Image 1 (spheres, one colour):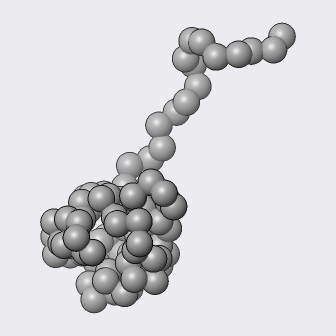
Image 2 (tube, helix red, strand yellow):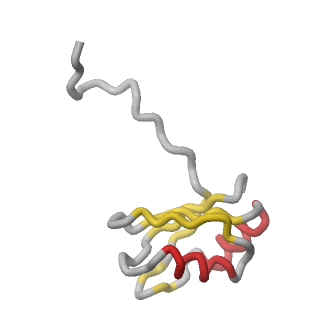
Length: 90
């Protein structure tokens, strides 16, 4: 696993950034937490790769507020350019 940023999926809509930070803090230093509101996923950045790996192993499948969390290494955003369709003004 490269990097220290984790994707966290299947988050209950009632979970807050602080609650997620508290959960991940038991596995290392949390640099940042960003839950995408209304989407059921977010990102947690740990202080180093080793802590991120430990958090992934410990928390993937962890039950939080009735949901089983999915924890994976974060992937860079996909490019949205080059597609056909859509409106273009020339």
